[in-house]
Image: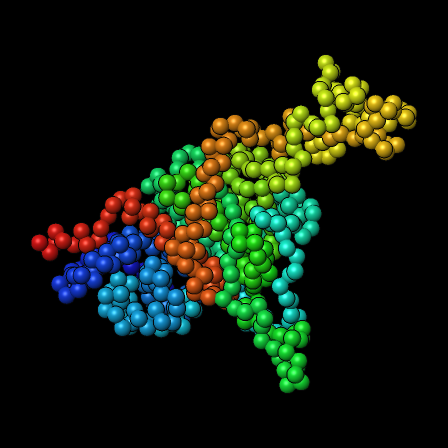
Length: 497
């Protein structure tokens, strides 16, 4: 069970009183930590209680310092300390950090930090430990090399369509071990940012989607349990144990290399002046972004029922008919670039068509109207050469194919939602809106470079997701300070005077 929860207003009063004492003895250090303390001062954890209370029993020994652990972890990432264990001991021995976190009694041991994070992760911890001890087949780095900017294709065709059909019917099932972390982000920071008006237009939120590789801190070689080394065999492919059973091989299209880890899927409010993320999800490195998008869309509707999402902005990885169907179902405008493979084929007028006649039939370069041959699902009109339909040999000057079937031409009609989007791709409105997709890239940069979450060498999806969630909280707190121009030391100085 949880001990008495301290309201945020009471915490702010206690913090000001405690910092007044430190102001007299550690003024220079307090000035250096002004922004960090201001962030913790603004972080309201009142909405955290209903999120985590179901995770604790109503009986037994009361758990304390849960609020302090959250503040301490946020402060750890802010200070870029790359070890929870070392940070826990540092806070315990530093009276200033101890008072900022507002711990009751003694500071929690490192085990208390890890126990809290494990509690937030909805997957079975015992199963994870069993997977770490289980001997598995060794899988080396794939040899396939993709082109620059190219992404791994989906493993199975039709997966996105099946998921979208379930989502439209309201029957999409999604096991999400990071759901508590997503709720903490939503209730503790995103809701406040929305009320502050820094997510963009409150009545029409635009969201940008993208996945980013998150490298594992573990070795992909694993730990050998065979006796090949004693026999002089050093390059064996025997089964072995892996310290990070959650990590898989994936393709990093930016660095053009294979990586061992997970994919961090990020959704940002693209019109926000501070590039604020509102949703994260950790998935297998080999999963295609189009699959994750379906689950992410359904999740953000549940997390933010009060928000109206007007625009969806993404790269060519989400350029598929089922995604357009799902967006239309939710009334969201798509701003998606064409897939690179489609761009090479998408040319109008069609290279095999000279023009169209008065009936709308395409005319081949020989001046003969092509014959309509039906609709190929989902959105392609098929036309065949007139001579091929009649079973005749075309004249030499009109022969454009050696096939007896004749030349075949496919045309995209104007009701094709993928080729002819509600806001045309060649319009200024589309181009201006699509430029805001870079917000998700800047958001990823803040997590991976400014807060250096990969430096922690996390060896589980749980730790990687937790670090990403703490980075998201810090990004929002940075935006609040910049937006309000608040200074904690500035609040203290009038009281000192």
